[in-house]
Length: 185
Image (cartoon, rainbow, N blue to C red):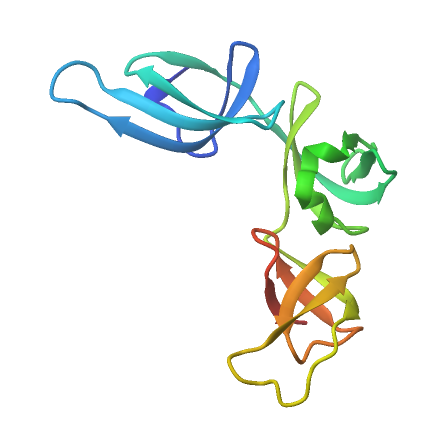
């Protein structure tokens, strides 16, 4: 058990048989009475985000989350298959767990999976990933004012806004946080 005053961003805990991860934390001390702790949390099983309020001194059940370095292998339409880099096991995760982030996955990409009692509850993508450009809009000659951009398609099918000088066959670096172009590699 841990005191609610120790909850910080990234802390994972168990309450009412649900696993929550803290997204934001705020501590409020009014002039009289006990302090209140407000946390915005994500339910790791359903993906929903809610706000919880606790009185100072309350406790929640902390849990030990295990981390596994895995390599993405393939997508069979419904499940994403990974390979654990230590044990060579091949866990499968439903594609909807990744949501829009599934577009960032490419073969042999290494990432981190979090599990609790054998149940995979979260993932952590690298900060940036390099992709090969497979399709590109045509650059228009003379269109160079105000930092012009064009859309390209990368090997996973994701569309990325890039500068006009990027061509098919180039390798670009993309931020996983928002899917934006970083640099040509």
